[in-house]
Length: 122
Image (tube, rainbow, N blue to C red; front, side):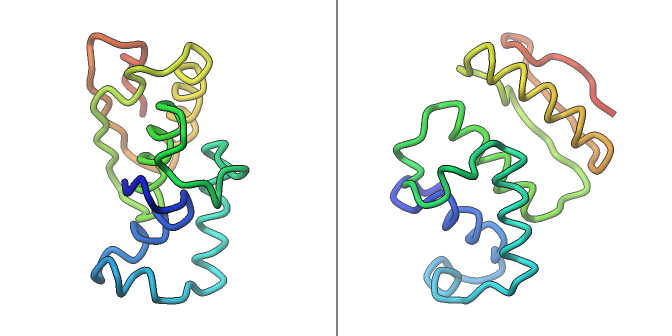
């Protein structure tokens, strides 16, 4: 995650990961890619933060942005290490809900014995 870039720019970078950072920032998104980013922002409850620099997000929001940067690439497997570390109780609860939703679309492996989310999601 690049803290000086906006939330949307971070997702764009992750989406266009086969290019250099500067080439990715100059490249235009097609409508399908824009829709994908909008869908992920809504899913992660970051749609109101689209133009906000990532460095100004709360810790939990940054965690969600990092998850979004993975999701935008449409992976088959999500390997997440302590994704709820440092989150509020409400954010941790939403993280568990999010993982249950994602389990129907992705294989998830969540690690971390010290923090709130310690379930196996299928």
